[in-house]
Every structure is written in C-alpha cells, then in structure tokens.
Length: 231
Image (cartoon, rainbow, N blue to C red; front, side, top):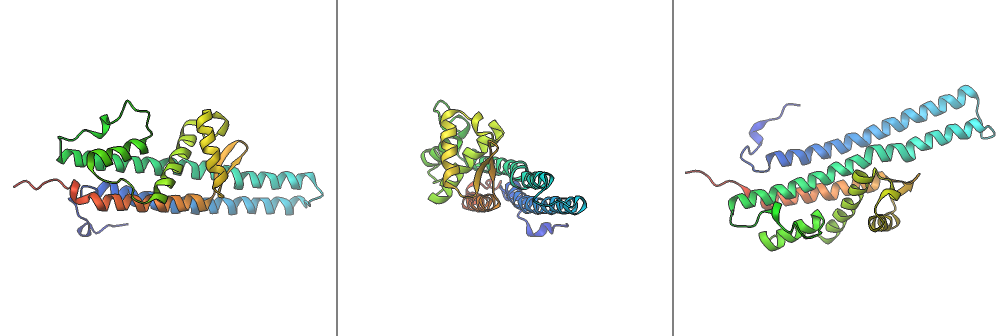
C-alpha cells in the first residue's frame, strides 16, 4: 500500500504512536481471519477423516477425532492467538500512556518525572499512571469508568498470560483470586485444561475499548505535547 504523505501531519508528536494504534487494529482483524481459516482447515480435515474411515458415533475413533478438533478450536486457537494479542494490546497502552507523560514533562521539566513517581509504593502501572496524571499533570487519565474497569481486567489477564503462560494454578494466590473472579463474571472468558482461554467477543470488545481510549488520549494531549516552534 502506498501512503499519501501529504495527508499526514509530519510534525505530530504522536505520529508513530498513532501508527502503532492503527497497526494493532489491523493486526487484530487479520488475527481473527487467521483463526477462522485454521478452524475451517481443521473442520475439513475432520470431515475428510470421518468419510475416509466411515466413522460414526458408535466408533471410539469418531469420538477421538471430534475431541481432537474441539481441542484445536476451543483451546489451542484461543490460547495461542488471542492471549498474546492481549499482551501486545496492553503493552501498547502502557507505551502511549508513558509517552504522553514523557512529552508533557519535556515541555515542563520542573514537574516530577513519571519514571521516578511513586516507585516505592506497591502500585500497578494503572494505579501509578492514574495517580501521576492526576497529581502531577492535572489530567484525568481515563474519565470513563467502564473503560477504566476494562483496562484493569486487561491488566490482570495480561499478567496471567505473560508471567504464568495463562496457567491459573501458577498465579500467586492473591492474583489467582482476582483472575478467577473476573473469569466467573465475564461470559466469554473461560478455563480450559487449567489455562485461561479468551473468546472472540471479549477480545474484540476489549480491543475496541482500548484502541478508542488510546485515540482519545492522543487527541486530547496532542497540542500539549507538540514541541514549541523554534523562532
């Protein structure tokens, strides 16, 4: 694809960040297309095997083949496709939130740096960022409560996937309790063979919420982060 650079604000302080937001949105669409393709391929293989071997529900091999297909569709695909995407989505959120804080600090160097703010307190990134934006920058990081809640959910699931490979029993007890509570309250998230699996509806909704909030954050702070013109 050839881009018309005349349509871009090449002095936009968030040109690269905006590109990353567009990229992860496109990546998610392709990811779901790939899942659909793999599901169709596995279904064709299953149907071909059943026809070739003339299998019926009365055969043990029929049940084995069905279980193998279900394992792919219900476990492997959600785990290995959608889990890593959520990790990347959250990483992008952290990156943009940090970049906004750094760029505003560059224009107001008397302010405390985000990198050193509340480091001694046992706060999550979201807690620390929310506190920094409020107390130091005078900005509400996320004014929409449902979005803030979903970011918290994403943060916990991201940590479970990144640090425990999505295996619930490997989480610290206090974290396991939080994650299990989320799983019980969210219809499209489940546990399969001891691992967290994510349905399309949850991931699609989460991607939409986070991407829209990132665009809002960028738009709201673009001018505040734009470098001063050199006269």
